[in-house]
Length: 176
Image 1 (cartoon, rainbow, N blue to C red):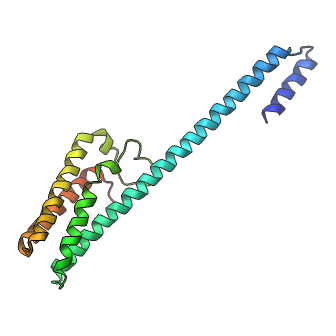
Image 2: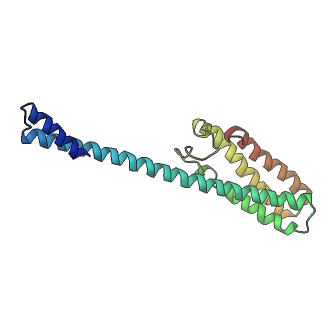
Image 3: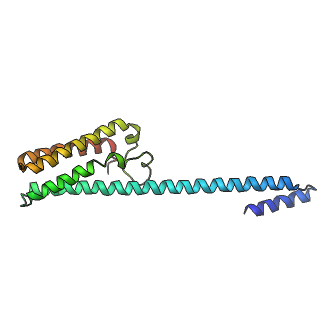
Protein backbone atom coordinates (compact mmCIF):
# COMPACT_ATOMS: atom_id res chain seq x y z
CA UNK A 1 0.00 0.00 0.00
CA UNK A 2 2.80 2.38 0.91
CA UNK A 3 4.81 1.41 -2.19
CA UNK A 4 1.80 2.23 -4.33
CA UNK A 5 1.64 5.69 -2.74
CA UNK A 6 5.32 6.32 -3.44
CA UNK A 7 4.93 5.18 -7.04
CA UNK A 8 1.91 7.43 -7.46
CA UNK A 9 3.83 10.40 -6.04
CA UNK A 10 6.73 9.71 -8.40
CA UNK A 11 4.27 9.63 -11.34
CA UNK A 12 2.82 12.99 -10.29
CA UNK A 13 6.30 14.45 -9.87
CA UNK A 14 7.36 13.07 -13.28
CA UNK A 15 4.34 14.67 -14.94
CA UNK A 16 5.16 17.95 -13.26
CA UNK A 17 8.73 17.69 -14.50
CA UNK A 18 10.11 16.90 -11.05
CA UNK A 19 12.08 13.85 -10.06
CA UNK A 20 12.96 12.73 -6.59
CA UNK A 21 16.62 12.35 -6.12
CA UNK A 22 17.89 9.18 -4.48
CA UNK A 23 18.38 10.86 -1.09
CA UNK A 24 14.79 12.18 -1.01
CA UNK A 25 13.48 8.78 -2.03
CA UNK A 26 15.49 7.01 0.69
CA UNK A 27 14.34 9.56 3.29
CA UNK A 28 10.69 9.08 2.30
CA UNK A 29 11.05 5.28 2.47
CA UNK A 30 12.70 5.55 5.91
CA UNK A 31 9.87 7.74 7.19
CA UNK A 32 7.23 5.36 5.86
CA UNK A 33 8.96 2.28 7.31
CA UNK A 34 9.43 4.02 10.67
CA UNK A 35 5.78 5.12 10.78
CA UNK A 36 4.59 1.62 9.88
CA UNK A 37 6.86 0.10 12.55
CA UNK A 38 5.56 2.48 15.21
CA UNK A 39 1.99 1.74 14.20
CA UNK A 40 2.59 -2.02 14.45
CA UNK A 41 4.22 -1.62 17.87
CA UNK A 42 1.28 0.42 19.14
CA UNK A 43 -1.17 -2.17 17.83
CA UNK A 44 0.82 -5.08 19.26
CA UNK A 45 1.40 -3.39 22.62
CA UNK A 46 -2.27 -2.44 22.90
CA UNK A 47 -3.41 -6.01 22.20
CA UNK A 48 -0.80 -7.43 24.56
CA UNK A 49 -1.89 -5.04 27.30
CA UNK A 50 -5.53 -5.99 26.76
CA UNK A 51 -4.65 -9.69 26.85
CA UNK A 52 -2.79 -9.20 30.14
CA UNK A 53 -5.74 -7.25 31.57
CA UNK A 54 -8.21 -9.87 30.34
CA UNK A 55 -6.17 -12.63 31.97
CA UNK A 56 -5.98 -10.97 35.39
CA UNK A 57 -9.66 -10.02 35.26
CA UNK A 58 -10.68 -13.61 34.54
CA UNK A 59 -8.35 -14.90 37.25
CA UNK A 60 -9.69 -12.57 39.95
CA UNK A 61 -13.28 -13.32 38.93
CA UNK A 62 -12.57 -17.02 39.40
CA UNK A 63 -10.96 -16.45 42.81
CA UNK A 64 -13.88 -14.24 43.89
CA UNK A 65 -16.36 -16.90 42.71
CA UNK A 66 -14.40 -19.44 44.71
CA UNK A 67 -14.63 -17.25 47.82
CA UNK A 68 -18.37 -16.78 47.28
CA UNK A 69 -18.72 -20.54 46.82
CA UNK A 70 -17.01 -21.23 50.13
CA UNK A 71 -19.16 -18.63 51.90
CA UNK A 72 -22.27 -20.10 50.29
CA UNK A 73 -21.30 -23.60 51.43
CA UNK A 74 -20.76 -22.35 55.00
CA UNK A 75 -24.14 -20.58 55.02
CA UNK A 76 -25.86 -23.69 53.62
CA UNK A 77 -24.37 -25.83 56.38
CA UNK A 78 -25.45 -23.36 59.06
CA UNK A 79 -28.93 -22.51 57.73
CA UNK A 80 -29.89 -26.07 56.94
CA UNK A 81 -28.24 -27.64 59.98
CA UNK A 82 -26.40 -29.99 57.67
CA UNK A 83 -24.32 -32.69 59.38
CA UNK A 84 -21.17 -31.26 57.79
CA UNK A 85 -19.80 -29.03 60.52
CA UNK A 86 -16.43 -30.69 59.96
CA UNK A 87 -16.37 -29.02 56.52
CA UNK A 88 -16.73 -25.45 57.78
CA UNK A 89 -13.10 -25.26 58.89
CA UNK A 90 -11.92 -26.24 55.40
CA UNK A 91 -14.18 -23.64 53.77
CA UNK A 92 -13.06 -20.99 56.25
CA UNK A 93 -9.37 -21.76 55.64
CA UNK A 94 -9.95 -21.53 51.89
CA UNK A 95 -11.57 -18.13 52.31
CA UNK A 96 -8.63 -17.01 54.43
CA UNK A 97 -6.18 -18.14 51.74
CA UNK A 98 -8.16 -16.33 49.03
CA UNK A 99 -8.28 -13.16 51.14
CA UNK A 100 -4.49 -13.03 51.21
CA UNK A 101 -4.45 -12.76 47.40
CA UNK A 102 -6.97 -9.95 47.06
CA UNK A 103 -4.65 -6.95 46.74
CA UNK A 104 -2.32 -8.63 44.25
CA UNK A 105 -5.28 -9.43 41.98
CA UNK A 106 -5.85 -5.72 41.27
CA UNK A 107 -2.64 -4.43 39.64
CA UNK A 108 -2.71 -1.02 38.02
CA UNK A 109 -4.16 -1.15 34.52
CA UNK A 110 -6.40 -4.15 35.17
CA UNK A 111 -9.61 -2.15 35.33
CA UNK A 112 -10.24 -2.10 31.59
CA UNK A 113 -12.28 -4.84 29.98
CA UNK A 114 -15.17 -7.02 31.12
CA UNK A 115 -15.00 -6.27 34.82
CA UNK A 116 -17.24 -4.87 37.50
CA UNK A 117 -14.26 -3.39 39.33
CA UNK A 118 -14.72 0.35 39.71
CA UNK A 119 -11.92 2.74 38.81
CA UNK A 120 -12.14 4.00 42.41
CA UNK A 121 -10.03 0.96 43.40
CA UNK A 122 -6.95 2.49 41.78
CA UNK A 123 -8.06 6.08 42.34
CA UNK A 124 -8.36 5.55 46.09
CA UNK A 125 -5.97 2.65 46.65
CA UNK A 126 -5.55 3.26 50.40
CA UNK A 127 -9.31 2.90 50.97
CA UNK A 128 -9.40 -0.27 48.86
CA UNK A 129 -6.35 -1.63 50.65
CA UNK A 130 -8.02 -0.98 54.01
CA UNK A 131 -11.17 -2.84 52.89
CA UNK A 132 -9.13 -5.78 51.56
CA UNK A 133 -7.11 -5.96 54.79
CA UNK A 134 -10.37 -5.98 56.81
CA UNK A 135 -11.54 -8.98 54.76
CA UNK A 136 -8.19 -10.69 55.31
CA UNK A 137 -8.33 -10.02 59.08
CA UNK A 138 -11.93 -11.20 59.50
CA UNK A 139 -11.49 -14.29 57.35
CA UNK A 140 -8.46 -15.26 59.48
CA UNK A 141 -10.69 -14.94 62.55
CA UNK A 142 -13.32 -17.03 60.75
CA UNK A 143 -10.80 -19.83 60.20
CA UNK A 144 -9.69 -19.60 63.83
CA UNK A 145 -13.23 -19.76 65.21
CA UNK A 146 -14.09 -22.63 62.84
CA UNK A 147 -11.23 -24.65 64.33
CA UNK A 148 -12.66 -24.14 67.84
CA UNK A 149 -15.89 -25.96 66.92
CA UNK A 150 -18.06 -23.31 68.62
CA UNK A 151 -20.81 -23.08 65.99
CA UNK A 152 -22.57 -20.16 67.69
CA UNK A 153 -19.39 -18.06 67.69
CA UNK A 154 -18.68 -19.26 64.16
CA UNK A 155 -22.10 -18.10 62.91
CA UNK A 156 -21.46 -14.67 64.44
CA UNK A 157 -18.04 -14.46 62.74
CA UNK A 158 -19.59 -15.51 59.42
CA UNK A 159 -21.84 -12.43 59.61
CA UNK A 160 -18.89 -10.18 60.49
CA UNK A 161 -16.81 -11.58 57.64
CA UNK A 162 -19.71 -11.23 55.20
CA UNK A 163 -19.96 -7.54 56.12
CA UNK A 164 -16.37 -7.02 54.93
CA UNK A 165 -17.28 -8.58 51.58
CA UNK A 166 -20.34 -6.37 51.23
CA UNK A 167 -18.46 -3.28 52.37
CA UNK A 168 -15.87 -3.72 49.66
CA UNK A 169 -18.43 -4.54 46.98
CA UNK A 170 -20.53 -1.52 47.92
CA UNK A 171 -17.69 0.91 47.22
CA UNK A 172 -15.57 -0.84 44.65
CA UNK A 173 -17.79 -3.07 42.50
CA UNK A 174 -20.34 -2.07 39.87
CA UNK A 175 -23.82 -3.26 40.67
CA UNK A 176 -25.60 -5.74 38.39
